[in-house]
Length: 378
Image (cartoon, rainbow, N blue to C red; front, side, top):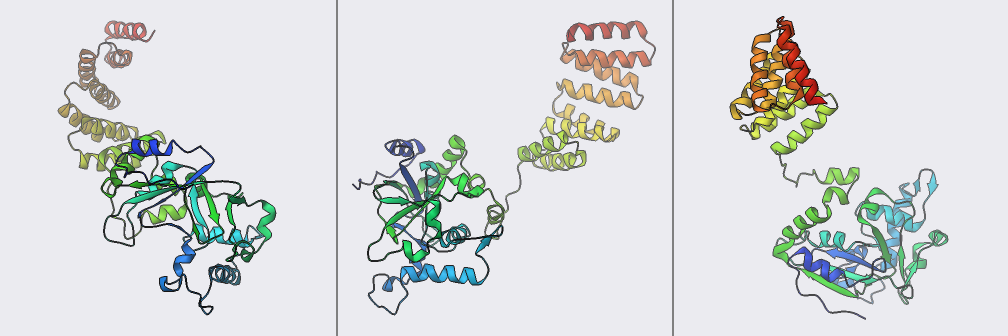
């Protein structure tokens, strides 16, 4: 029995409350960016509107459109995968994956994934529109499940225009996109009636998507985890968004762990360009330069880190290490003194100072530092 539409949703919690009424696994969902849309197979939309309900026998039927699509795909050799011949449904699933208009209608077991699609902007209109999420009960009396033995049937077997039968199908060999979107196909008629709908207020779409990412981690990258999705996110209609300082810093940290120090420095260069007053960026770039034995350049970075944060104990310590490597033991000890004054409980500081004092033959003081280091480390 069809339920009434919900009042327009403004926030994620309102939608989750609406979705909670449906039993998990027995209902599936579909999100569309315009509340005027119905649950309709995309192949049917290839028929001009003035012909969609026509009795004119001269115009191709819904069955003919899908049959012709499969025939063209077979003629072009798109009817095999990994050396195995594909059935009609499997060919349609591949075509649907690459955005061809077919009789298959995409649904998802996840109400939140459907919500993400409902919060898209409608590409067919320049105006902002309300979105809509459909809920459909996967009733065994209403929908026949496609078992493997049915895959040998041709598409006219499934699309009986006089007495339509509805089917649902989850391909056994699922690609990453189907898995990420928790997808299932419904088909059998050009239109399917919903059990309930939820309207998403147009002015809140962007905010709801932001909430979805924060609460559930649902993003375009996660829903389209394949090469095609990667490419489509970088088409000529997508503005290039430079990485932030934090994003460059995270990339630099990953490169540092992989000992890719040149890459590390390049990312810290960009992070510093975007955020030139953050002491930790100079400090971290100095670490990478020191690993490459670019000691003078590393000292310059530690100097900047200390200038921006005079209480940066680790920067004094690392600068001392570099000076020691250059044989500048007295300036190194001065840096260790400063680091210890700021943080007197770090064993590494005393150990490094002890080493520098040994190089200057200050053996008694060096022994005291070594002992203090051992005490703090124990």
